[in-house]
View 1 (cartoon, rainbow, N blue to C red):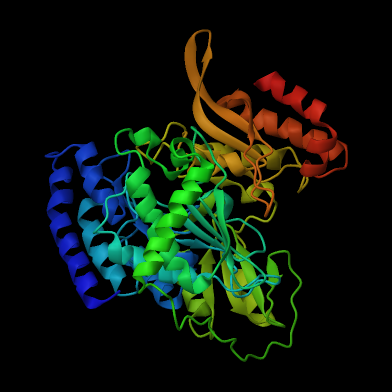
View 2 (tube, one colour):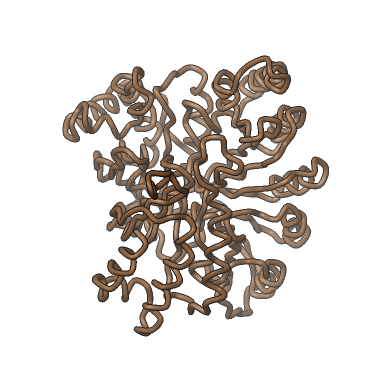
Amino acid sequence: MNKQWTDTFRTEIENFKGTIGSFDKGEIDRKAYKGVSGGLGSYAQRDASRHMLRLRLPGGRLTMPRLKFLAEVAEREKVGRMKLTTCETIQLHDLAAGQVPPLMEEAVEVDIYTKGGGGDNPRNVMASPLSGVQSGEAFNVIPYAEAVTKYLLSICRDIKMPRKLKIAFCNGVDDCVHSAFRDMGFLAQPDGTFALRIAGGLGAARPSIGVLVEEHVNPQEVLYYVQAMVDTFCAHGNYENRARARTRYMQDTLGPDGLKEEFLKNVAARKAEGGLELTGLEAPADIARDNSGTVDHPRAIPQKQAGMYAVKYHPIGGLLPVEKPRQLYELLKDIPGAEIRIAPNETLYVINLTAREAEQVIAATTDSAVAEFECSVACIGAATCQQGVRDSQGVLQTVIKAVREAGIPDGALPKIVISGCPSSCAAHQAGAIGFQGGVKLVDKKPQPAFKMFLNGTDALGEAAFGQEAGAVLEADLPALLVELGKAAAAAGQSWAQWSESHAAERDAIIAKYA
């Protein structure tokens, strides 16, 4: 970002010191405070004396300067928790009010901008986490995610959207970034263009697959499409009813065909104005390394660059141990091209490693989940989030413990996805098994429970939302999952195989609890 923009941002941070100070003294209420803090990427936690700061990382890129910053901050500020998010960011938790503004300002020095990390703003622009190194990809989409980020930050002060805007770039291998149901989803094509869907979204009300509006977007013209989406949302989004103020509701008000027509009209108008072409975007050149070795490990992923590897590291629940940034930085700082990418499934990928370096990273991350079920996703939960209903992190720990003790073999249960409330922060509707926090009446008394969803998928070209399968008491979740896992294991099948071939048995087990 240019100096004028960063100077303005620093002024906003300086002004925010007074706002967060007033909130800390109880002089303004939560709602008023949230209206200011969200736009700067921070929220008060359930305990109002503690705060979260969300670090915007376009494409989930955690470069060495950013990793060093994270390591130093964790040590110096004694950060309580670090949470990897499903939007490829990192949240710093349990901060005191006085810590938040200085950290916002310090982050600017390593190109981390918290501006727009919450509130009615364009959110972190996502990209396939292995983009640039993944075999079979159409092309590297990271440069476009970063260019769109810079553009959105440059205009975010000048626009007032009804709600947030989420944009994702998929490299064409898998769709873990959920381009099929984002506000804007760019899917890289083998011919070097993007297919574009708009006005998709998750949520308890009206989950929607995006409308395909263009099959061959010239990558150099993506900013015209982004600006046209902002124009369309501001013109037709719902400013009156916040619950319906997301782009997916424009599929109702305009109809899919009408939405496409209006959007493309705005694209044409912006192209006529000109000035938004992207030029000079180049993917980083491959680094010449001694890459003659090999490594055979379930967390080592061969890159498309011969002899190079990425290493997968999944801290359970997406809770990154606060000492881990320092450990990884010391290990990676002298490795040319080494970088960490944050994936939407709360996984870290360390990329551009030789076989020997990959083995060192594997040894430094032995706390990683390995079994598919232990790679499950959960939001931060109601113990921390003021919007939360259920403690999704606590539930995840409980069910993992139960599945381990029951000896369920790897693969007999899928990765599950747990959102602590209807907000779908964990994208539970896209999981093979998803849970949404809520309550269930038992003898006319509300009890902690989760609504269960089955057969959601984000598979490329097959995106589908899970179907509701009933509400399960929180206390019954471990028993339910263990029984399902034992049934699949007894049949000698993976969860996907068993769930399809034994659907009646699966549904009968669920019915016992739901």
